[in-house]
Image 1 (tube, rainbow, N blue to C red):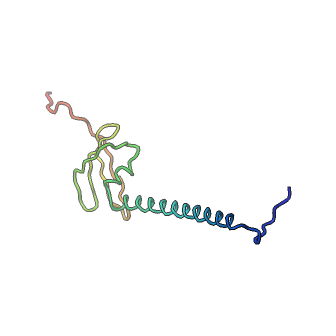
Image 2 (cartoon, one colour):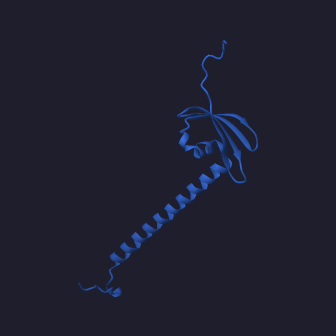
Image 3 (spheres, rainbow, N blue to C red):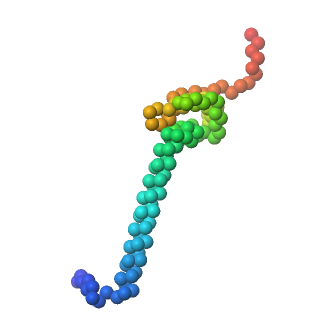
Length: 118
């Protein structure tokens, strides 16, 4: 099979502009995808550093948290009551040097009759 040689003087305007058009489209898509991935990564870091309410769901995906209630808040610590697939749990988030982490995840017993007769 013989190779075709590229003859610039015989290149038509249509083929030239077609090639330029598609190269601009593809390069724009590559830049857009890289920007979207970078932005998502940045948002994830911000969520773990500054938004502990979102960090609760990100740090504990295996718990399948449906609803959470903030119980107590201080500068570097937050306590939550979280409704999970296994029932209610107490979750304590603490702030490290750069991001929040789950310091304690403790199962709670669902309340029945609160009076105890010996």
